[in-house]
Length: 159
Image (cartoon, rainbow, N blue to C red; front, top):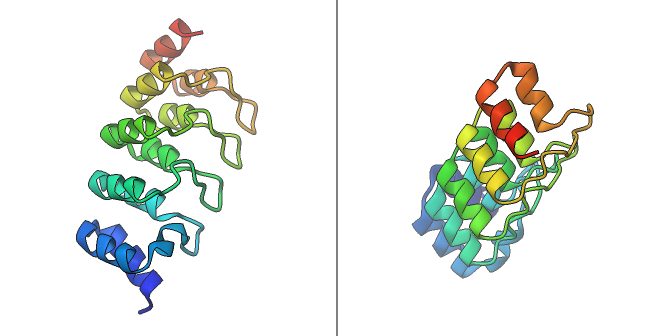
């Protein structure tokens, strides 16, 4: 197993000590991407490893780096529902209005995957509720389509 593969395996398993050791010997690992274009930060957050995400951010990981589909770490946690990591990324300067290749934003993900606490957090931090995805739908459109009245209410009161 090469160093890059080992590095990503440690990230997936949440082994912050091993990741820190590998970064100490090769800081360039912070910039590598896996076969899907995922960055170390994106993978750490996707797997719910907030402590590891903090380490990577402290080492200089780009908070808004994108994977092969244009998704960022914040988009991934909106999909997964990790509220604390969403807060961590926002506090690190993540762009709440970043779009992926399909035009989806973090807010659209939070609504689509019924993550009301994250949706509220995003709105509080300036998420633009008028942004349309590639299909022409806003987060409010997605909430209405799903019949998700609490999210409809949240978005309508912030229009």
